[in-house]
Length: 120
Image (cartoon, rainbow, N blue to C red; front, top):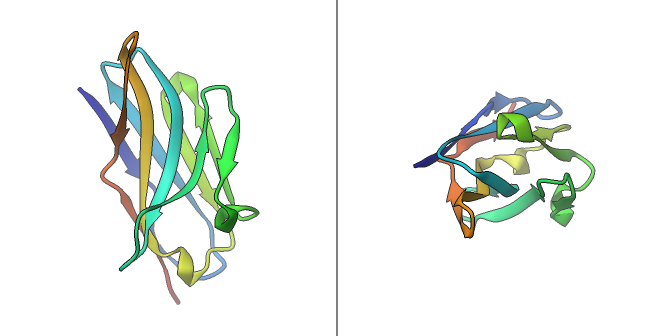
């Protein structure tokens, strides 16, 4: 079994910063891409950013400049730094990972999400 657990969300004032963490655990042979998605109230889940095991990153246009994704392969973890938070960043943030449990068998796992609320 594989689990992804997000942490670091909360209530933040506009202009503040947060660092979200995602930790993978369980029977894992390797982790390929890891990503962060968010789902705002009444909207569909959307990609924020993803990162390969080699560190190559990809950002949604809306995320460029204020958000930074990183990972620690040894810890099986990914992070999302969000600066200059805006009310429109309010959403549930989800982590996902393409996990290989047995060589040749890879699937995508999702965490339960962490709420980020930006409000004064």
